[in-house]
Amino acid sequence: MKSVIGKNLKSLRVANGYNQENVAEFMGINRSTYSNYESGDREAPLDVLEKAALLFGCDLSLFFEEDQNALKGMLACAFRADNLNTDDMKEVADFKNIVLNYMKMERLLEE
Image 1 (tube, rainbow, N blue to C red):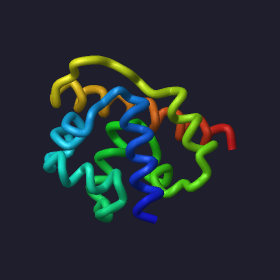
Image 2: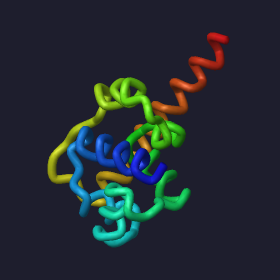
Image 3: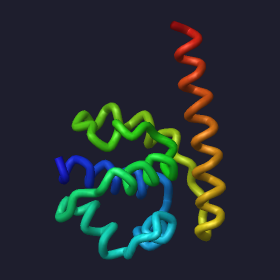
């Protein structure tokens, strides 16, 4: 499962135009630690996955998804920007969280 999570972390990071240093700084961890999560050498703790879900604007469950087709929908909607600092990334994460919650509400109301 570590390799699935790592592969999905990397796919989402690359699709959003972030480098490992950006993401690690946003999460408050060392770049080498984050790199180990992406490579599947270390298991990413829940708090790291929760922060990644906020940053990438996805459900936490997406990191555990082995079907790459499920991931493609999120990759198509990735928000890309250059030269973001940690504060900018926090703003993007907050915005994505609002959008994700809105989408969840819409689905619930449709049911």
